[in-house]
Length: 112
Image 1 (cartoon, rainbow, N blue to C red):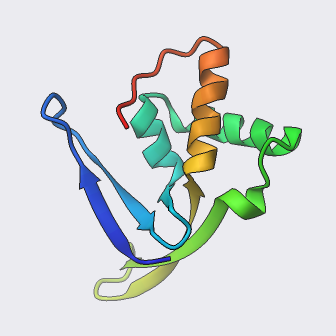
Image 2: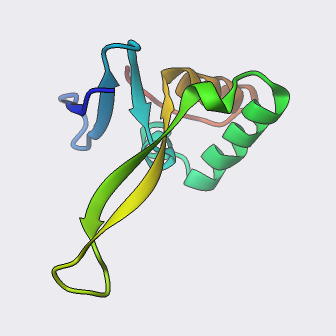
């Protein structure tokens, strides 16, 4: 995966979401928090929808999920960094969440 970040922002919205672009696999990668922000719903709803998607066999978690490590500042020790593992989900997972949420009547607005 390339570590390329593309920022998309419409004229109508003052907010934006940075996503990781994977040109080789022709997909984008988002965290659960980014997906929640994208659809305007809470992260626990994203966790629930993803659990149902994987449990039903609609998608294989090993295929649509990638764990990446990020270096961040250590919260308790000044000047020290730490490695944090973060799960990212590809566009297939994002679109599946959108489909499930629509079926259950959740109102979501998303511009792709």
